Amino acid sequence: MAPLKLNSKNLPQIATAGDGNVQVPTYKRDGAVKEGIVHVGVGGFHRAHLAVYVDQLMQKHGVTDYAICGVGLQPFDATMRDVLREQDHLYTVIERSAKGSFAHIVGCINSYLFAPDDREAVIAKMAHPDTHIVSLTITESGYYYNENTHELISEHPDIQFDIDPANEKTPRTTFGFLYAALARRHKAGLKPFTVMSCDNMQKNGSITRHMLHSFALLRDPEVAKWIYEQGAFPNAMVDRITPQTSAADKTALAKDFSIEDAWPVVTEPFMQWVIEDQFSDGRPPFEKVGVQVVKNVHDVEQFEKHKLRLLNGSHSAIGYPGQMAGFKYVHEVMENPLFRKLVWQMMQDEVKPLLPDIPGVNIDDYCETLMGRFSNPTIMDQLPRICLNASGKIPQFIMPSIAEAIWVTGPFRRLCFVAAAWFCYVKGVDDSGNKFEVNDPLVEELQTRAHAGGTNPLELLQMKNLFGDDLRGDKRFLDETAKAMEDITRDGVLKTLPKYLD
Ligand code: CS2
Image (cartoon, rainbow, N blue to C red; front, side):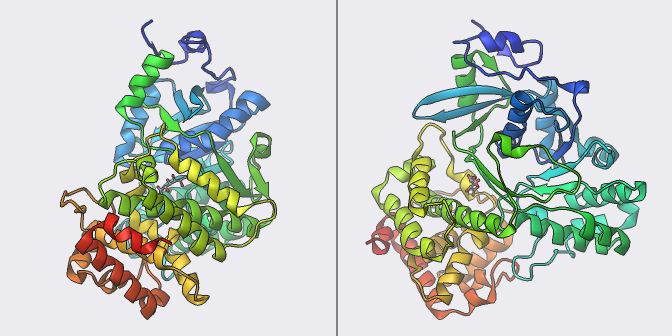
């Protein structure tokens, strides 16, 4: 049968098409629910993570006050606007593993606002009394956070534009929108909404609070104080591997499930979310759908640390050297015995000793599970996705483990190898001499420095907004990294790797 276009009208047919095993939303939508969550940055990860939890709350637990209004701030979000509008804001989540494919239609995104169409509409939506939470997946660069000073990059032209009161109604940055909406709520005597970061950063909530507060201080100290004292910014660990959707994914969805969806999401079965219980204006009962809502901020920090250092750190170990060696997908890299050992030994010998014990979590089991997740061949996770915006990732996923290993004089050669592989990667040429695109907001500066430095990492490490002084000043680290850069440059990744394995 011809595939059915995904929209509200076709939902009953979609539920019974194919083998009749597509789960579809049967809860109320549109005017019958309230949009309690405004989410900025509706990409694959949001649609496979927070939106799936909210979908389950609406489907299984009768929640009607927390449907999502999606918001796009960037020009490229126009495509998401068009796709969602065309499909009555419905989309498919395709979960893939060795057990097979499972398709599920999500309906909890109730509407979508594209800021360049109407910036005022976004501010008004956030300021609306029905909005209780503004959640964010805006990537590391969306926070304007200086990794070295831990301060807002207030000299950035976007922030400069947004702090000018003349631009209050036409902000560019997330902070500009949050501030404008919160200032209105303050004036109207409403509670501040919770700002819930779902980005993959250590202390994501605390950073959001500090950045927004710093921004607000540049505008109005009274509003800033109110945000600081009355606002809530829960820290959270978020996890679900979500590759970019490919044309083949759409074709497979049409063939296997008879669904025509212009932008489905492919993901793994695993998902996890640990969030601090800090909400200023109420929240849905997230724990009912498997979210770990914890009272103590230290618990969240420990989960975050495990995840960022083990999962994302290993992704870095797979991504940069893997791409230099000519691989395309994460599972392909994991099929190579040298890389498998690198990932395992880096986690076990170098990262694990630095991590806190979390009651109820067995780190060895966690690492084993990660090896399985990375090896899942059905999700076709692309290395360029892993390598995207590395200047926001390496300083969080790899460098802190190196800095801590320096402190405790622990082993760190494999971590240095990964940092060295990234320093070589930024030149944009792989081991066979093929050019590739380096997708990073700082690409120009990175490349200039990489070329000027040759195989000496110091030139890149001078980027003070990315790297701390302890790294620049440590001879053991500098020598180890320079050596790895020389070896990779001369012999390539695959010939260099055995030197790093037991
Ligand atoms: C990846 C993450 O982009 C990356 O660096 O490591 O997107 C990773 O897939 C997620 O954090 C998994 O939760």
